[in-house]
Amino acid sequence: MRGLVGGFLGVLALLMPTAVSGISHFSPFRFCQLGDLQIGFGLDGWQNDTYRMHLAAQQVNADGFDFCIAVGDLTHNRYDHEIQAFQTTLPEFQIPVHLLPGNHDINDVATLKQFTRDYNVSDHSSFSHNGYRFILLDSVTLMSNLTEFANYTTAEWAWFESELKSAHRQSEQIVVAHHHLPFEVSEDEPDSYWAFPNRVRGKYIDLIRKYKVRHILVGHRHETKNIYPADRAYAIYVVAGTARFFDDNGFGINYFDVESMDSARDVRQEYVHLRGVTHMKRSEGEPTGCPDIFAH
Ligand SMILES: *[C@@H]1O[C@H](CO)[C@@H](O)[C@H](O)[C@H]1NC(C)=O
Ligand SMILES: *[C@@H]1O[C@H](CO)[C@@H](O)[C@H](O)[C@H]1NC(C)=O
Ligand SMILES: *[C@@H]1O[C@H](CO)[C@@H](O)[C@H](O)[C@H]1NC(C)=O
Ligand SMILES: *[C@@H]1O[C@H](CO)[C@@H](O)[C@H](O)[C@H]1NC(C)=O
Image (tube, rainbow, N blue to C red; front, side, top):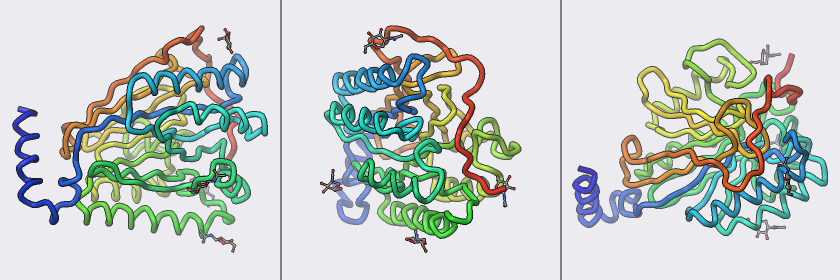
């Protein structure tokens, strides 16, 4: 059946090469989702977080991907030695690793600017790959109500919507990635530390549904699981990463195989443990002491 669908799309692409740019650019590809690398958060010290980032690079290089997305919290404290360790290890990845910020990277305008300097990337960005548009958001700025962020927040919402529109116009399939969970259990759950507050959650979900986004990559939770809304219109992939985990799923990486332009059916996800680690020690309790990004 999949072969038939692929064949059909192939014929379409030949017949309409200019009108449907997303489809005409499609060929299968693989990408990966790195969870919170968060150098400095591990129970066994920042050198070991760095070591596990190095193991992740080896695994990614061996297993063959077009690119990866790291879903924020690149370091724990933005200490110079943590950022230095991250910078030194990143080039070990032989493919592009797209970075976006978490709440440990950005919690005010000064750290937003620092993020763009330290990592030489914007806090939000997008790229197209084989008919798919990847939209990487700064969920900190998107959901914060800090006054100093106000114009950044407005600008990012407008940018997000214009990216969705332009992807839609070009018949691209859309994947969205950011740090925080849109929700943890259901779309209408009460506010919690982990997820978008209700103040902005509805607006976000309306856009996701309107533009038929099927796949959302996040981190922040330090657990590994998939979350779905009641009608399973889209999937939220949460991956704990390589610094600490608070469930029974260990350190690992999400692998994605994109097999057609039918993103609802033909994007396959698989969680793979990090190879070569000397321990898979679960952290007890809950992550605490995280920067506040809200006005009170
Ligand atoms: C920490 O990393 C070193 C390698 O840098 C390794 O030899 C050691 O076993 C690791 N410790 C733990 C607890 O994983
Ligand atoms: C920053 O990125 C730009 C392009 O994105 C590149 O031309 C430049 O060399 C980079 N600078 C550093 C210091 O990596
Ligand atoms: C927000 O305002 C500040 C100061 O007025 C300015 O430096 C900054 O570039 C603005 N940011 C955006 C995204 O417009
Ligand atoms: C800011 O947002 C948080 C979380 O949504 C909320 O609890 C708080 O009341 C808001 N503060 C202000 C001043 O609007």
